[in-house]
Amino acid sequence: MKEYPVIIAGGGPAGAACAKALKEEGIEALVIEKEKLPRHKICSGILFGQTQVLLEKYFGAIPPDEVYCEPNTINAADIQEWNKEKGFFNYVWELPKNGIDFSKEYKNIWRNKFDRWLLEQSGANVRENCLLRNFSTDKGKISVDVFNKEKIQIDKLDMEKAREQILCKYLIGADGGNSQVRKILEPDWIKAGPEVVIFQAYYRFENMGELKDGSWNVFFKKEVGEMLCCVHRKGDFLTLCVGGFTGMNLNESMAVFKKFLSDQFRVVFTKQERVEGCLMRLAPPNLGKGNILLTGEAAGIIYLNGEGISAAIDSGYRAGKAVARAIKENKDVSLIYAEMTTDVLDHMKVCMKEIHFLTE
Ligand SMILES: Cc1cc2nc3c(=O)[nH]c(=O)nc-3n(C[C@H](O)[C@H](O)[C@H](O)COP(=O)(O)OP(=O)(O)OC[C@H]3O[C@@H](n4cnc5c(N)ncnc54)[C@H](O)[C@@H]3O)c2cc1C
Image 1 (cartoon, rainbow, N blue to C red):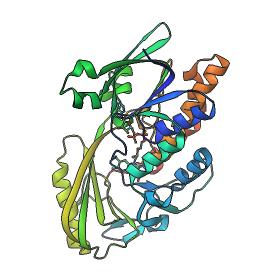
Image 2: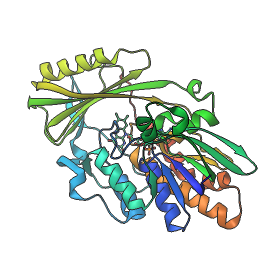
Image 3: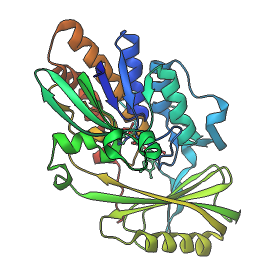
Image 4: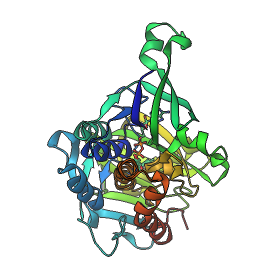
């Protein structure tokens, strides 16, 4: 049975940053990613100021041209909230951290291209199509139970042939907002806080009407939806995003939002090209237990309103550094990781307090 010092479940920003930190410390890690890369991820695809700082700091670069979509830049001054009384006015999406303010030139990216680029930069050893199903611990080792999805395709649903066990000393759950690692560690997770559902649609359009190109338009009006709704251009598409608590009919919310944009701003939509959805759990953060760490959205680390890439990169990188220190100093990794992420969790609390996402 193959054994690694560290297995990272999930090849998103948190997993890539964790792998990068481990590589710098000369520790071998395997990233297991359930999808074939590049994989799509529901996202508005904005690199905020802090994200760019962290990319420079941890990866030494911001992404190359091919990762961006048109318009390449969204200026923070062009993130606009709208209401009937005031019309458009500036909306603050990103807050200063530890007194430091960030660039207001945000980048508009394709997530599939960005995530693949980031994973490549990490120098990680990656296994795609490899899904973590379960894990168990015994005598200081973690046995990770995975499915090789490629084998399932070849062997026509012969599940047994696709199952495999990989051993490791440390397991990092960087497997996103529906983390399997967290579900196993914290069976009550799904009951620990409200669940939010998010729905995003990509529309081709003939005319943006009165919506300003290069602006990210945010709406908090009951007439539009229960939660923040937003729209901005990505290449040939307008991406519309609506959210609500579980049980809401988001198809209906999307139709209402689209009609609102047509009626109020004279946007002319043509074809709906793609729809996607996800679930977000608003439970308190969980950094893991023993030699199993959670990071990024799996840990519940996200700065509202959904500024999650920076939080994922920052916490993922620290998880990798925490493992390296624990190995070198023969110390408890979860204590080191908790200590190292204090300011990230503090910033999360500030964001929760300052930024709203429910309609008034
Ligand atoms: C609609 C929407 C818009 C958003 N817009 C922005 C934005 O503009 N800017 C921003 O900064 N943030 C945004 N976010 C938040 C951001 O997308 C996330 O916070 C960020 O992607 C979290 O990164 P992560 O690495 O923790 O998880 P993810 O990016 O979700 O990566 C997790 C990876 O784990 C893999 N995986 C999952 N389960 C398993 C398994 N069992 N085994 C193996 N692999 C597995 C997944 O395939 C995935 O590749 C948005 C979120 C939503 C929902």
